[in-house]
Amino acid sequence: MKINKLRSLEDDFDGEGAKAPSNETIDKLVRAVPRMKEIVLKRKGIELREPDYSPVRDGGADAHWEIKERYEVLLVVNPGNEPPSYYGDFFDGEPIKGAIDF
Figure 1 (cartoon, rainbow, N blue to C red):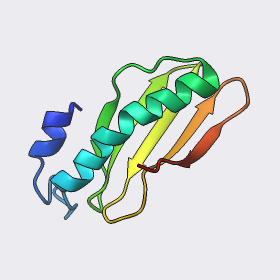
Figure 2: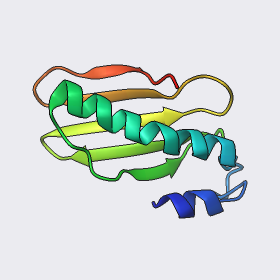
Figure 3: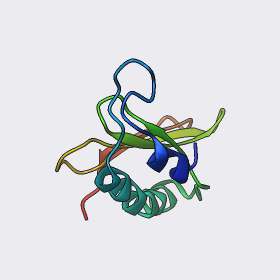
Figure 4: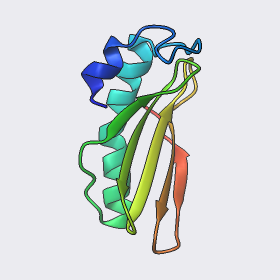
């Protein structure tokens, strides 16, 4: 989903009581995406395209990149003050993981 669609979600967007991500959470995700791209480029030499965005049931949001048989990267922002976290599975056998500090 695109970022504008993510911003337009309301609580109970899934019909099962999920909490929509706040603008603050989405803004933090938007700020973290360029940093995530830098990390992957520096550590793996891969330029990530624009991600797909998704809500998380607890009011969080994530960005996801995937090229089958090459890599998968997930960047997650939870509601609150914890930093965005990421995990990348690269089919060279060396995953990356961590948190992004601003």
